[in-house]
Image (cartoon, rainbow, N blue to C red; front, side):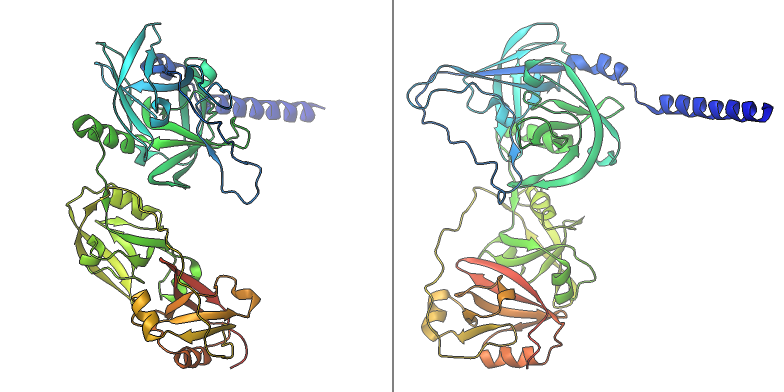
Length: 474
């Protein structure tokens, strides 16, 4: 009995010790909020009445739809047609200078006729827009005041996945609401967001938190809360913040020039998959595969070619294709930079002068009209190809290539009739395709489990298609 009591006492002691240890490890946010909460503001905007068409709501239940990222500014619904009443929206922001400069999201103040900033001391002041950048969703506004509390800036590069972070904002208009969570991931790329390596967190973010700060446990701002993933419009555990270094660079340019300058080099790229890496003789999937180079662009003048894999730009590693637009965009136009590429099974270094991104360009041309080739048997890819005539080469501005006339293998859904096959890559060796017999002979010499990559032109676009496994015949 004494033994049992002793054992029970030891067990209770261990449990108590663990509880105390856990209690010491749990974060205490009170001091952080007391010291920095006053620098967070509530932003309200309004629009004068105007005539608008009925808004069309997206079909968010469509299973084929990409991840739906909802901007979170609640707006009052208006009637279907005719003038609508004055509309209002809510958001958050934070003071970055004692004389009244405030960072927030561009979508918070978009199309606003009037912007009001409410401070924690209950003062309400009118704000003017210094500048806004929709590409990064960063805006800088200014109120006329002095001796304002301001936040301290941190280094997002030091953030670790799993680290505690805290948000302060005005969800649904509830001012200075505090929520906390952890960093879920870093460097996230979101659809249509090429210039921001988002910080993903599980901090509860809701409509009205837009533009508010994300703090680390040292009381430093490491991000600007910008987006959530949601199928309902409310918080679902996936929140995204703009790294503060990105936001500060944007606000600096907005303050100095009123706009943001971004670099461009004029290439179309795609992700390097495992199969593509094998085809190109790369030791592992990395970099950005160039499938087209704009004529007379900085990349063209610098010697970059289609089929190059860009692995490093201006001293920065390009691990994923999504890294390249961010790195190039952050490079000042006119800069002379070194670019490392993987070409024909070996690395080489090129030098180019970065241009300036002026506007988005969208290719809208139709694919060339299909022409019926002479009858021909399917090759080991399960497709029928025909050689380009001299007229077709002139029309398409190509020196070589084979047109896909028919796709007879169900497994080749990635190829379509009318595609132009320009090049085949196998084990790092690049071969221009000129005749159907040449392609058949090349395929005949490969193992049935071979992995090859085809450079394909479809309309005005270029892409690389990887094919693993060939027809057993031949």
